[in-house]
Figure (cartoon, rainbow, N blue to C red):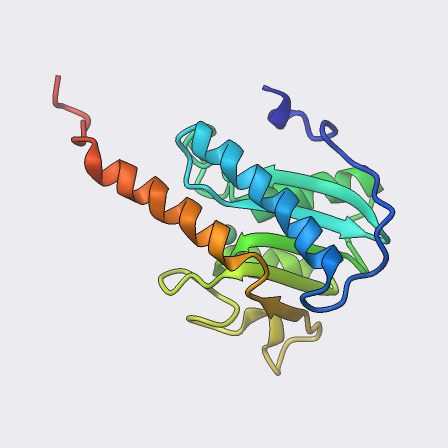
Length: 180
Ligand SMILES: [Zn+2]
């Protein structure tokens, strides 16, 4: 699949640096939502992420934990790895990461390691969110790098996508290992 190619689907953009809730935030979040829909089509929890630096999309990915049988294959992890490989550098200074769901502790930690400037998410994750819901990894006062964050951009379509995914899961009888 093309989505496994880290250098596929990279897009140039003419957008100017984003303002909170401005048109460029919505535009990049729309790309993250496209990624989330790809995840849903693969029967993955529909979460997508985009990394943008100076108006260039350096990384875009969706959740692939089931496909890769890898609990770390979250959209944000995959997108920042792509971006760093593309830059040939481990830090994404000045980058903004758009993700359809509030990053978990693992992803928030990776975003701090990558020194991203800003994170924008659509909806909070009350069970796993490590940025606002269950912890403040991006803005912990003892941390040597603070990441700005903003939430709520295109929240409605992101929430609809998650709700319809989980509703469809509940509608289908579960087949578990050992049922055959
Ligand atoms: Zn995560």
